[in-house]
Image 1 (cartoon, rainbow, N blue to C red):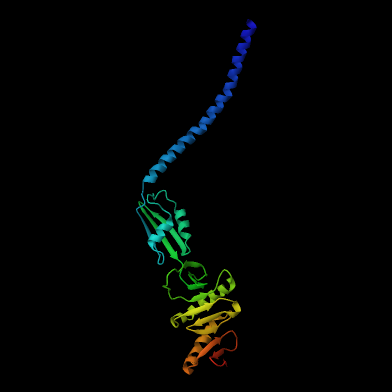
Image 2 (image 1 turned 30 degrees about the vertical axis):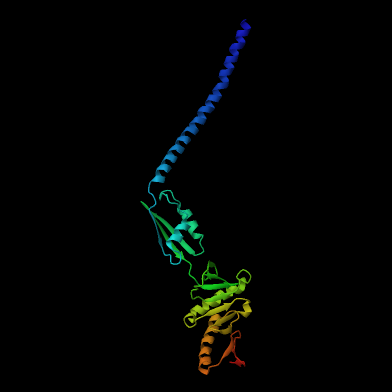
Length: 260
């Protein structure tokens, strides 16, 4: 009997030794988890309070001319019940910047309930005629918007495909810039640039075909303006004008060619 009791006593002692490390680990885990859980509960409580505090009452847009306030409000991605405290200015910035019309945007919160959005839009530069479809493009050739109706603003027209003739389209943009700087927009009713090949860059000014070629656009357009005065004074019906040569201008009347 004595030997049996001794065995049982030893077993109890071993069980006590096994539970001590487990209790220690449990206490250590509790020391980490309980504060963390309390922090999460407090954070959620604060977030819940902020979600209902400072409700968004109005969004003011400044600097927009082509996009109206309703379009911009839709671009923000903001819902009906928003808190100014918890909404993400970065998300609003990214959502609005996704529009090709937007050149830059600044978002600022004004408590208690106003979100101010400062917009800088891209400027319409030319009208792209791509296979009968018309797009407004900016001065970098970026497509801003496809025109769906027949009301076309007065802009120089570029005929071509920027995806197939990228270099020629880039030169057409440069030519349109030179046309605007030369003041030809106010002198002509219709200006059309054909962006087919760089060396064969051609412009149509109110029905008069002008072969421009590549480069030196400012000098070529100055020569064109000087030549037009002479053509008008002599009342020459012109088939086309060729400005591609450095030292001479070729004017082809309807039935002949005149070199100057």
